[in-house]
Image 1 (cartoon, rainbow, N blue to C red):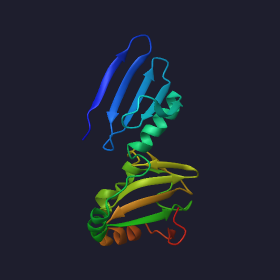
Image 2 (image 1 turned 90 degrees about the horizontal axis):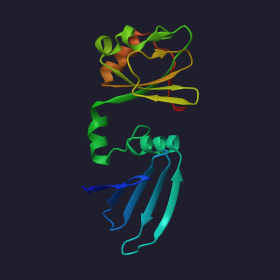
Image 3 (image 1 turned 90 degrees about the vertical axis):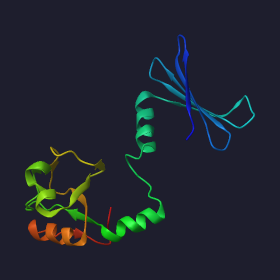
Image 4 (image 1 turned 135 degrees about the vertical axis):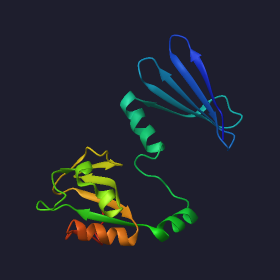
Length: 169
């Protein structure tokens, strides 16, 4: 793993330098104003090959993407092993569902069925790893994960009628 070098830039902010496995360098300058500049230096070249300037909120969004908040790639062999014993289901919440308008914690889903809610899709919003106080709303799509028997138990316990098959979102 590469080491990140940190240095003060008086009157500007901080500079972070990461040497990439390719020999290139990635330099991030965080200005006191919150603005970020990202420079890519090609190996043995003192001029940056590219520069990107990001506002504070843009930088935070990119950081969330890079840290895996929106998508966590799984190495194929690990995925095969994991998915051998686990199933994911997309469930559309009907207005009359036993899950509708209830907090995750009050439903006690994991204790009753063994499955976990990994994601809530609400319109255009995605809520990864929702906290226990999150309210499941009608028209939400929840993604659950568990063993095959646990999924069947969940569907039976909560009388699920709206599973998404081919139109998974």
